[in-house]
Amino acid sequence: MPKTTYANQKRIRIKQVQKDGNHLYCMMNIAALEYVMKNLKPSGLRLWLYLNKNRDGFDLELSPSAIKNNCGLPPSSCRKAVEELIESGHIVSDGTSNGFIFYEMPPETPP
Image (tube, rainbow, N blue to C red; front, side, top):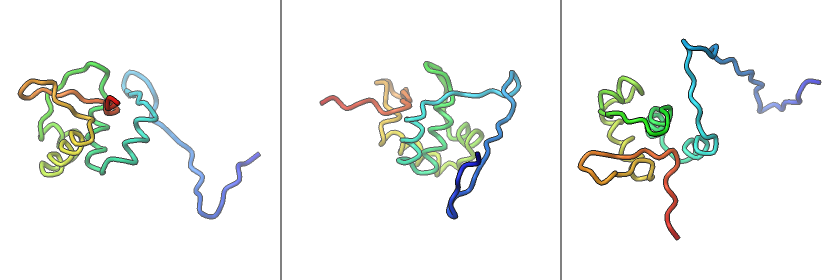
């Protein structure tokens, strides 16, 4: 039986690229993804997606040129995106001069 739709709705069927060794997929926590979609600006969301697609514990060297090449963000938007993720608690200093930790969800603030 077909689903009922209303005038303000569009019925959409999802078609994904084939999943195999040539077409890699990443898994993301749905609650974290929905949280950032609601709370981050577009450039912050793009950077969050870029960082979150990596496996847990993966280390990378992040630079404005890497962000531009991978996310399409110009340097000014890159700086704002990094600042937003720092302010939101997604990126936190690891205590070294230029080391940081990316959190899919910001760590909970102690009571």
